[in-house]
Each structure stands twice: as C-alpha cells, then as structure tokens.
Figure 1 (cartoon, rainbow, N blue to C red):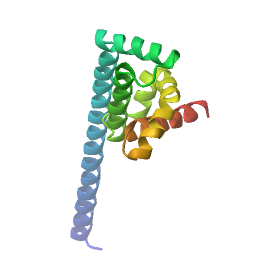
Figure 2: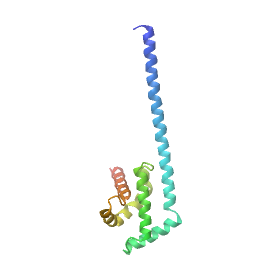
Figure 3: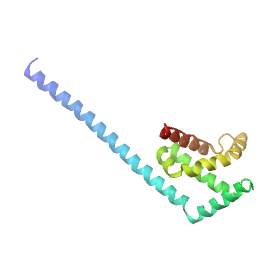
Figure 4: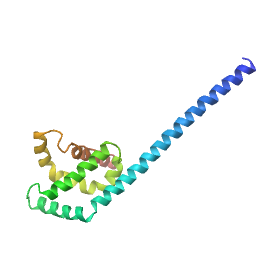
Amino acid sequence: MSIGDRIALTAALAGVAAAVAAVAAVWYQVELARGISSIYNTVRMESQWRSPEMLMSRAGAADAIIHQHGQTDDVLTVMTFFEQLGYLVKEKAIRAEAAWEAFSDWSLPYWAACKPFVAQQQQVNITYWENLVDLNREIVAVEARRRA
C-alpha cells in the first residue's frame, strides 16, 4: 500500500469517526432535551395536581369513593387528570419513571377505586379511559422494576 493510499484510508477513517461522533452528539442532545422536557411536563402536571381547584376535586372524589356515591364530577375530574397524564406518558412527553416518582402514590389507589367504572365504560367503547389503563400498566411496571 502506497503512502497516498494510507493517507486516503486514514482520511476516510477519520471521516467515518467524525460522522459517528456527530451522530452520537446529536443523539445525546436529543435525549438531554427529552429529559428536560419530561421534567418540565412533570412539574407542570404536579402544579395542576396541587392547584386549589384540583385539591377541592380530590377531596370531593375521596368523599364520593368512600361513601360510594358513584362517579361524581369530582371523581371524573381526577380520572381525567390521570387520563391526560397517561397520554403524556404514552407519547413519551413524560417518562414513566417520572410519572411513577410524582404520582404513583395517588394514581394506583385511584385506579383501584375507579377500575370497575372504567371496565363498565369500556364495554360501551374500548377507547374510553385507555390512557388511564395504560398509565396504570406503566406505573405498575416501574414499581415492579424498582422492587426487582
């Protein structure tokens, strides 16, 4: 192999290495941006969860569940919150780990309390509350991984 061929080969390899490094850098930046976006969206949802309006709905929902008043507007408000959270997790706008960290203490008990209503609604239309169902599945999967 001549010196010119070696220089050409070295240049080609350097070009491939630079391309791989550029792809890795772009991938890293995308993952970093997704992580930051997930944190921002989680904080936004936590703010909504702790808002005065939601605190009133949560209290009303707890009362309705404890006293078996059925699916009141407050219960539906809380379920809709978790439906939206489930959508954000499904679309990867919030990572499942972040949702678990911020909301599992709330989402799992509400899921248990509302599961019969969800099953009844899904007999009418399977798409009703599908993001709430998916959220529960994701939260339970994270819980299982965390507990090994």
